[in-house]
Amino acid sequence: MTRILPLDEVGSFAWIAHPDESMQRASSAIVTASGTLVVDPIDFDGLDAALSRIGVVAGVVQLLDRHNRDVAAISARLSVPVLVPGALAGRGEPLVVPGVQERMVLAMPGWNEAALWIPERRMLICAEAIGTAPYYQARDTDVLGVHPFLRLRPPTGALSGIAPSVIVVGHGPPVVDDAAWALAAALRQSRRDLPRAWLRGARRIIHRKRHDWSAS
Image (cartoon, rainbow, N blue to C red; front, side):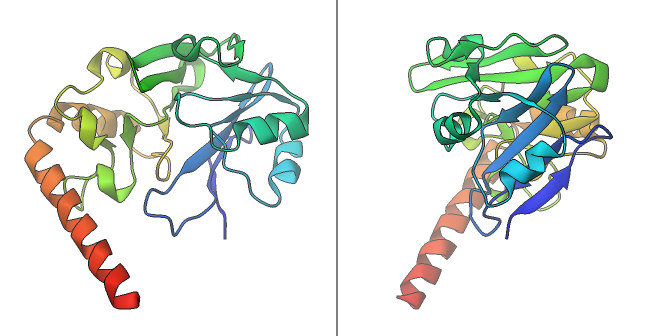
């Protein structure tokens, strides 16, 4: 059953359409003065009704080149454009929304990603570079972590110098408490915790394979 997670007092929300997935793919609907931005969406029954309760949808946003997800299907169904940041130029209409800033996270073959920053509400919306799903964690107590493949070179340039009160991620539930602390800790510990994070990830893969074998 889809997990709905409120984000702010104006109706923005995140959701995890398939909570039992190991990757915990998450999506969000961000209310702005120009309309709602539906970010990296995974479709679910009742999405259109949930969106209608928080206002007009301005567009469907894709923040990561491989996060095609249900972007095209939802934009077509709602008759709204696909909006993309500069990192994904050419994949849709430019993302120009007053009060919403783009932050380039990564630009390389196979991984072009941007984040959105709403200074007035101190809300950070990310796709892949940071997350809260278990495979981002180096230890059970971690709130937020850097993607395993980026731990050696964490995206400090894109994500430093801000103090978010809410962090919305593309994998796992959002961070709504002590978000600024969680972000600073994730970036600071990224390199140091790399061996621990990779070992933890390897153990999770082995455990999952053993579970699959026993169930077959």
